[in-house]
Length: 177
Image 1 (cartoon, rainbow, N blue to C red):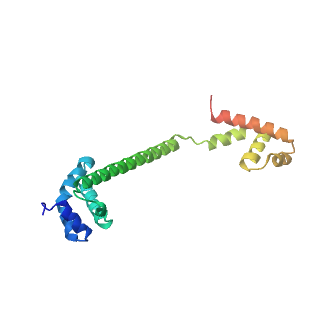
Image 2: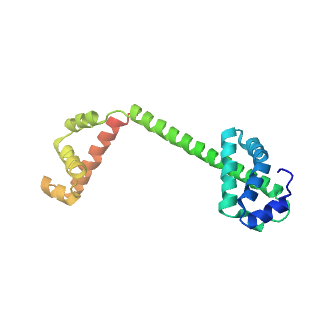
Image 3: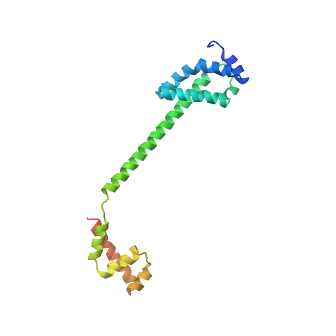
């Protein structure tokens, strides 16, 4: 069976003979598995790759454009698929590494981030009444500058001054020099 020439096997394949496909598979399967293993270094993956290749040969009729000896085509096709698999595995490992690093970084940020809420509230309590009211109305309640100034009974420029000084106090409380 191994002695059957590739040209005869191809003729049978082109005629739709499944026995010709069996002959092609039997003749080249082990050699192609060794070829794939040389690149992949995993026997199960190599066998799966070669089996998938032979399925494509039959299902997609990849043999229709072949002539004469097919050994070179088969080996090159398996080599290309092996290299593609290695690229895919490398990309998956890189994505996994990036994901793991992001996950670790996120956990580290949460662990290292101090709780500023208490410090902000304490600093707001220590501010003068107008600075605290200006910050609460504009930043916590979301009011526009003019609206907050009208409620406080002060000019727009006075509100801006209270906000500027209040934010400066908050920055110094949270970000020590």
